[in-house]
Image (cartoon, rainbow, N blue to C red):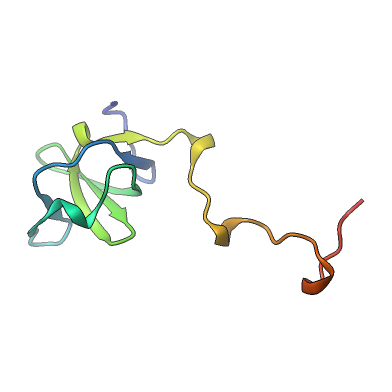
Length: 97
């Protein structure tokens, strides 16, 4: 686990704290089940006290470096929406030769 993170880096949760803090002007403690181990997010800022602001699918939370790891650029998650459509006569796409 590295402390060499930068804004915009993609990270993955490797462990959950007892509670997570929201990344709002007045942070609130939330139960850890709002995020899960293995979930990926993007670093949005650096906060005092050794915290990183990270945007996840269910919101932005503050996490310490010990709970996150950098996702190597070749291993970023691919969603079905990000995959290119397959060539087929039904969707009007033709295979390139």
